Amino acid sequence: MGTHSAPEPVYLTFCTCPDAQTAQSLAQTLVAERLAACVNIMPGVVSLYRWQDKIETDTEVLLMIKTTERQVAALAARIETLHPYDVPEVISHPITTGNKNYLDWVRQCTANNQ
Image (cartoon, rainbow, N blue to C red; front, side, top):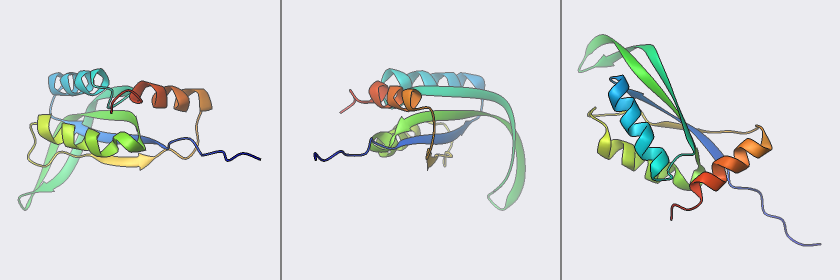
């Protein structure tokens, strides 16, 4: 019997943006640079958070970014470089199950970024 390695894990990364223009620009760059296969842009997210010891409420745009485990660190670094926030939200979580063809597509779309 031959050895069979498991496919590379796929991740879902969340990132909030201050406005639609920032969200669109970030999403475009991440997909164009093959750091992400797909980015969903979800406007109208209300975020309540503590910043500089005050409770703030803002309307933001949420990015749901599909990438691979290999790209997570580079994706986070790119977001931090381009994002206008001092401390951008970049939270990644492994996708444990999903449509095999979709997950394979995510792997293919991000595979050429070395």
